[in-house]
Length: 456
Length: 117
Image 1 (cartoon, rainbow over the protein chains, first blue to last red):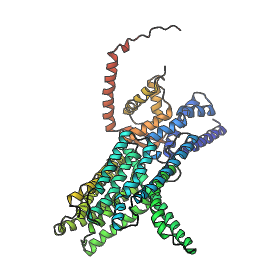
Image 2 (cartoon, each protein chain N blue to C red; image 1 turned 135 degrees about the vertical axis):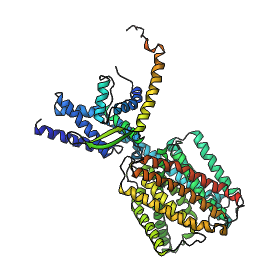
Image 3 (spheres, rainbow over the protein chains, first blue to last red; image 1 turned 180 degrees about the vertical axis):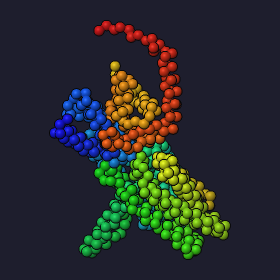
């Protein structure tokens, strides 16, 4: 083999590599593996008497057509599919994108309009307290069907799926409006907090196109939810700036625009943004790297460190956790955060990769959180009889239990994985398999609690 | 004779598992082994083997690790796990049933009626 000849082969392979790299379903390590294959094939063909150029061409051809190949890879590695859902040609992508944009904007406007519909029946957005309570109870029920509708349309949800979603919506509507809640009562506040959780997870059924049992679809919905939240916060920030400047500009010419902004722009914009954010996440997922995992990367070490320092401080000073009314809710929030950090670090991880230092750090975070929560629970249980079982406390205790079970088993699976006794997929499956538990619990708090505690 | 796409896809898992039961191997060697065993009659598109291997890895049927080839290139080696052996045994039984069923039909003695050209 002459030197110039092998130079050509190296160039060809470099070109071929950079061409493959553009396919997001095929990752660098896969390309390494395919390159090893290609080089073995080329070597064999050359031994059989072909020249380098021919051998390369035949080798590439035998690897298969690139589109089909990257589709196969995408099917197997759906976590990468997230970055580039569409493997079809560019033209098709363009027209689909446009149609999707139209539907999304249409639904966003419809959601904005739907928010104003109750006004036709005389229920004022900033009217008397009973009117405002109506919005507090029904806000999510008014907006989320449009987001569910968007995905039902996009994924072609079956009629059975649509009926199931409609039925949960009706149940939510009845649960929020039939009972005579005490205004400002605990059960009302609990229902208002838990309704979005339950409904959001049912939107996931539409998002998965009905295939909500699939672990991969569930994980994709988790990814979507994180990105959606970030987009929504960004849009809300922009909206805040927009409203502030509007008030300023109009006040400069002596108009007071604050009132109309609060009645019109705020509710309509906030409702429409729910759908727009959902559509943006769908449309932009191939362009921008996911943000939620990046935030996870930053905050996992911070929270692990904070909890460690907290535990050490407690051990040295010997001071226990002071139990007051809201302490349980505070520790629930801590656990929610830790579960979220864990979930999003899992969502972005290549399940085949070997354990890294970050995995050990995540495990440390989980263990610290469990320890801190155990200390808090100990302190609370000692005095629970003194407090009595109010709806708030039962809800908080239930949530604590659900999260502790999740984190406890996660810690076991994580330890197994770090000691190479188990696969990372097991941990992923545990998390995605656990999602319905949240939905069921939230639904119980919304539907059962008010009757259980006499609407107080 | 070309073997249909569905049949190639269906036989991929047991074939790869069976080849790996002979010992640790890597993609190109597996393809060559398939070629050898079928005397070139079973044709795979080379690249398609890899998603199959990755699926087996994800399901814990095979284990992969990066090593070096004789020429010093990075090469990914695959090895059958215990779970993989169990799966292979179960696949063996399933294929046996299919095979026996087909054999008990006129399938084996079937002669195509000569057609006018």
